[in-house]
Image (cartoon, rainbow, N blue to C red; front, side, top):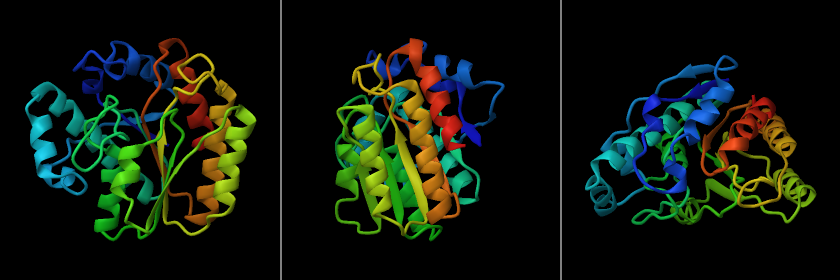
Length: 250
């Protein structure tokens, strides 16, 4: 497994929790020495326009520091997707997050929809036909759902559950009913942890989520899978939660 990362993701580009100092560093410090790291290139405007409207791109461009990191985050998702489609799992240790970014709008600490752009580029390049996006962030990825609302070849599923058992059961139940995909893409949010905003999942649950998704991808699409970081805001547990997920996912 490869980790897509750039030190520029540590840039504090805003005052929101996703951009907080130390958030990316706590994950990097947990993973370094245990995984191979690769650096991405910034996305191009052509990449952004795969799912976003031009006025939205121009609106974000008005904030140069935000724009620079945001296009690099998209580039990180694109790199992770590229690695995955070649047969090796990957994780984008990126920020800003992206699943609340729709075609012409964004909120919730997001600017561009990293996972959606990466999936759409694979489709446009004819590298995959049908993709599954699984989102286990605390919050529903309305941006991702909006972007692919009229696209039958891309299925978006947000995992929900009021307890660990219900959450994992709902994930297994959904996957059991869906078997035809060329790649599994994951919006990996860690804010549903018992010591984060959601207060539900344990660290071990993230390892199980990773294992379930790994085994599913191995059954349906030759193991082609990748994930990118979305939420997760308690720096004291975030690194361990990400590592647990990756141990199951790798």
